[in-house]
Figure 1: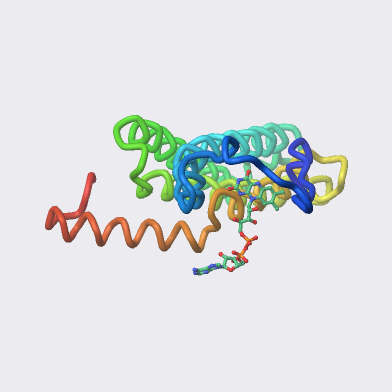
Figure 2: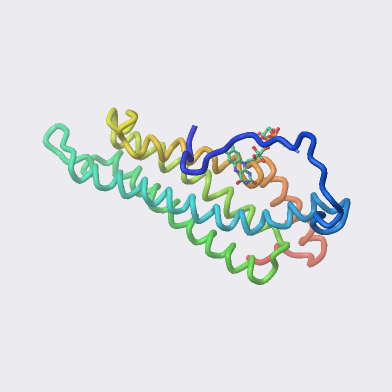
Length: 189
Ligand SMILES: Cc1cc2nc3c(=O)[nH]c(=O)nc-3n(C[C@H](O)[C@H](O)[C@H](O)COP(=O)(O)OP(=O)(O)OC[C@H]3O[C@@H](n4cnc5c(N)ncnc54)[C@H](O)[C@@H]3O)c2cc1C
């Protein structure tokens, strides 16, 4: 559907025999080893979706200053102004949270709270901003020639890769409860 610069396909491990020297870590720990990389993946992906939001906002802003309807530029209509205002504000909040998640990762690579919140917010925001950008461009935003059409398709993967939005919600809530029980206050605000 999107992210075509990152091709995806099936791999098969039929009839493969590996020697003991090929084991990574210790037997039985595979899932934990795999999961330990997910926090950094969430932080990196947050920035990818912040970048996607920024590009969609740029394209919408540019078009709103070029396209005229009823003798006015699009950005002069209050309903378009409202869209631009929300798009900018949500872009900035997702960027700030992504930066905070990077800082958190440095301090505690095993803490999922902020990375999960950052990727959840950045991916939901990018889908919202790409969708609004298409609306601002109107018909030309919907067709294959337009970059915003691709941005929306790319944005949708953000809620699936590196743990889905549903799993992120579980991670955020359970980390909050755990920290609250330990520290008896809302953590790190
Ligand atoms: C093109 C592409 C590239 C990808 N690249 C990456 C990558 O680089 N790194 C990466 O980590 N992932 C990546 N993914 C995502 C990964 O492959 C899985 O798709 C993802 O982890 C979800 O697993 P699943 O598809 O088996 O869905 P399922 O686990 O079957 O989930 C299906 C639905 O059920 C919900 N669900 C499942 N369990 C629960 C639960 N306990 N509580 C509530 N709801 C639940 C899910 O949120 C989802 O909505 C990529 C996916 C695609 C399509």
